[in-house]
Length: 114
Ligand code: AMP
Ligand code: ZN
Image 1 (spheres, rainbow, N blue to C red):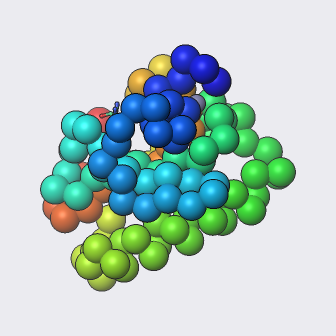
Image 2: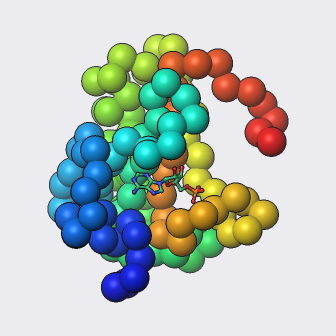
């Protein structure tokens, strides 16, 4: 999608602080971190939110979570723990309409979220 911020980041048209990239995914640090470690994982393909996912996205989602697990091991937070969040729509607090998974770590996270 031509006017989508995260499509532009995925295409390298807008710079990001990249953590990981492959053919399907990009992981980069959040510009406004909500925890000492806060990065985002996005599919390069434009998907508006988790509400648009179908069975056809099963392999992509498996890959997303495998990459998150590997990155969290590399970053040393696999044992201390972390949170993976995807916000959907207005009430879910989604501000960028391109599917993304927040990964937050290195502090104790409250539950329930606000
Ligand atoms: P959400 O509110 O769940 O849609 O999350 C969007 C996230 O994208 C927020 O945590 C923002 O801080 C983050 N964000 C927005 N613009 C950028 C950017 N250019 N680079 C990195 N993160 C960004
Ligand atoms: Zn997009």
